[in-house]
Image 1 (cartoon, rainbow, N blue to C red):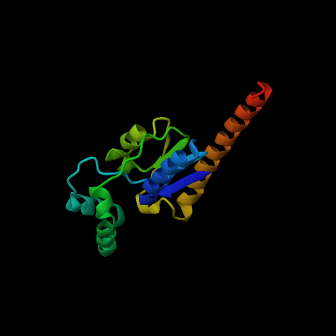
Image 2: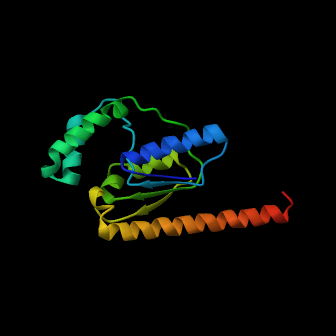
Length: 162
């Protein structure tokens, strides 16, 4: 099982991977985070700061969409539910703006074994025609490596009679 999430979907994938671990007693095969959002570390919700940051990412022409989106997710930012650390396989693809505001540190604290891969674009460009090829290649390489490692482990366990 691989959980993947883009933006707010990254938090949802993170939560789902934790639920999977709680239910089945093991981490899913992998967690893939594509410029995933983070829970606010400051309990005070600063909607003006978030709005300005989103306008910087998406542009002034998207202001109404941004306001609608932030109003919809405001309860998550104010009352986060943070599961235990995720110790499974994790790849986090981040843009420079997210790294600058601390996303790498936040995700590393919650997914200690996480591998990060920076990509040079804006948040809303991450899945456009040009970038999706790069993101797809990064994800494919990650999954192939993960499968190779699991196959080697399986062969070793078979050889050891486990």
